[in-house]
Every structure is written in structure tokens, then in C-alpha cells.
Length: 84
Image (cartoon, rainbow, N blue to C red; front, side, top):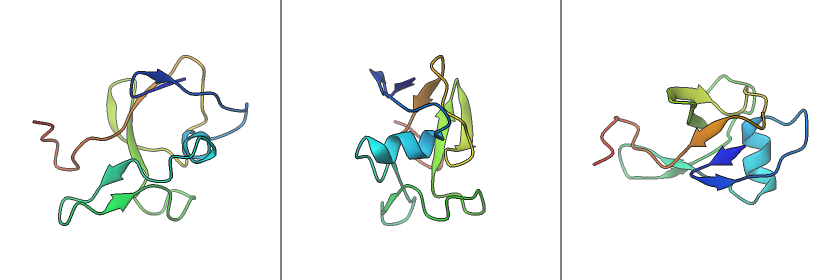
């Protein structure tokens, strides 16, 4: 899979969040207020801390998405949609 333009290895059966954490990335977005780092919190899809964009679809929970070799994941985006 590709994450932020770079290849990221993963083990079959891992979620996107598990692959990110295994690669040493424990946070990949920030809160709107205070810009506090966020990554996996609940790990079961209840919260929204692990959101990523996958293949152009924003707001995907990384903890629920099985990693696939052909997916493109984007992190580091503002929660309010203003990337500029």
C-alpha cells in the first residue's frame, strides 16, 4: 500500500491502522482545536481518531480497513477539510 506517497509494508490481515503503528506511526492526524495528535484510540471503530483518506474517499476509519496492496492512503489533512 502507499501512504502519503511512500510504500508501506504490511502483513496480510492487518488493518491500515495496525500497519501504520507497526511502521512506527502512532499519530497521523491532528484535532481542529489545539492541533493535538491523533491515531488509534479505541481500535474498534467507535471513535474517529484514526481517520484517513483511502483512494480519494475521506473520513475512513483506519482501524476497520483491511490493508490492501493497491490502496492509496493519505493522512496529514486538516479535519475541517481545509488543506491550504
